[in-house]
Structures are given as C-alpha cells and as structure tokens.
Image 1 (cartoon, rainbow, N blue to C red):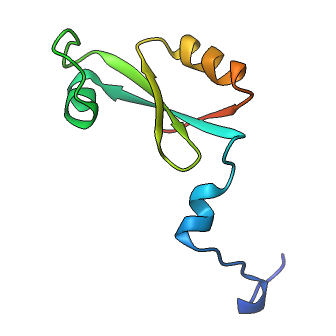
Image 2 (tube, helix red, strand yellow):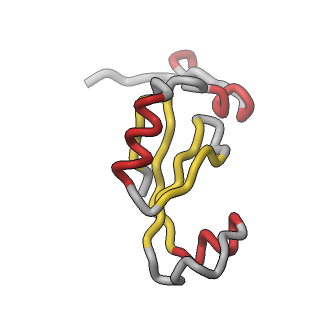
Length: 87
C-alpha cells in the first residue's frame, strides 16, 4: 500500500474541471417528467412520473433530452462522444 502526501495531490479549478472531457465525454442522467418541467420548462404533454433522459456535456450543460435512452446514446455516438451514466 502506498501512502500519498500533500505533494502527490493534483489540484484544478472548478473551471478547469468543467472543461475536462469537453468534446469527448457526455453524461446521461435519468430524470422524471416533473423534474424536466421544473428544470427545462418541458410542456405538459410529459407525465410527471415519466422517466426522461438528459444528455449533458462535460461542463454540465444540457445538450439534449429524450424519453429514449438508446436514442440519446446514438445521438452522442453520432457526435463522437463517449457516454457515462450518472445516477
């Protein structure tokens, strides 16, 4: 087992962290219809308990929202983005 001290730590600013993976990594997060309405102003045609999926850029920005996980994964693939699921 290796012990690490303060000299081994790498620090980065919040802005640098937000740019990590930009253009290469995207995150998919499931949300409810109710959350989508509150966060993104999604119309009333979405049911409150319906599961939707949000594709976020590495910086956390919303790139797309869909009721199809496979559709979002395909969209990310078309944009040459590696997807990660967030729970």
